[in-house]
Image (cartoon, rainbow, N blue to C red; front, side, top):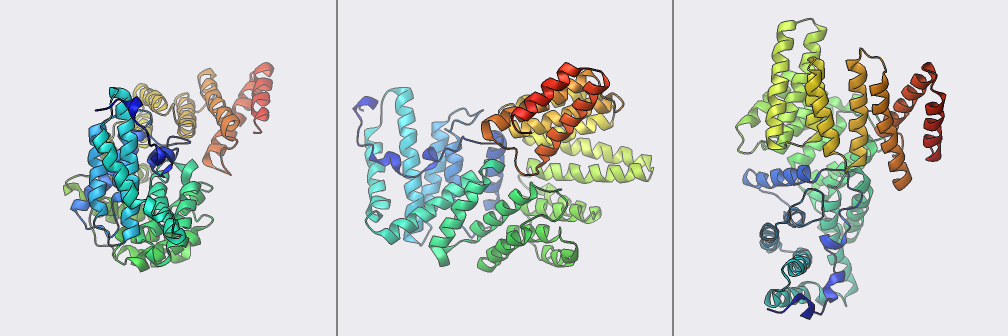
Length: 475
């Protein structure tokens, strides 16, 4: 074994892989939630044969084990297991360039991990390093003098990057979309169903962020177009079929078309059942929704999102029972909400969305102390994620107003000031909250509430300070 300082020949450092894609920048999602979702998706391989490769997932999953995301405890051995699994998966590809693209990323990722191990252990496994360099020579370097082959292998690698980037939150969606579009333009007939589905989801996610979630949104037809392409490439892609139905279901005159499409879905693994349930919940067909979810209770590995969907259905039914003054059903449905929220949190204990719904549940049942405790926990979890933190702070401020019989007081003013503080920080560092996003609405409402409160209480100094701070960042 040689020491780390003895090693050289670092030409491989510029080869594209997870370690040079800046994956820790502008992240608005929680590491543990990303990891849980990926593991859940990997579980589906036991239930259904994937038409497309799992290499992009396995490679990203391996990278997460040694990344710089907040909350990661590095596990070199576990990372290596995922990278080896990706290598094995790559060998199944009959397309030489696709296969070598995956092998290239895996080898480059493993070389970076070797370097990290060398730094922490002050030695490097020169045999393994030499072997990986030879792999890169065979899988990467041999294409660099052939312009067409080089462009195609880079396109395949772009889809690996897009897969990872698309899971980092809203701020990275545009980059992921760009990477997928470029790869699809280069690869033509080799385009995969999963890429088209992912591109449709990225378009929809960015567009939905600018409007009320339940309504039709800009660019929805473009989103629909890519789901249809995904199904044309692979007619068995029920996940894309569900996404298509969900998008069509938002267009009033196409709901029946959406219903026909969702009825064609026959696969019954967790992701599919959750999407089907979302469709019927969106159409307010709660009996069918519960039938769909009940099918999944016997699955080997139901996800946190699966149980969360159950809770959301019963949350809607609770509102209906309250409106109809059916107090017996309201009590029963509330118990169901609590049960399924708890089951969801058993799987993903720091899922901010589920915790937020549980805090809301506590508020609605006048368990204010428990609700406040959860709100504070959520904000602590979301501290590194300013966009999500802003939403959590706004909900906490609203909770305090609700607890105070829907009136502003000093406590709620402090909470709304926290919203303003986070918004100003985001605007000063990132320049924007987005166009007509929910975040903009939260900040605007917080500012208006504070202005009214300060004016009512003759606090001119605080009012002027608020207006100076918001105007300085263009809000």
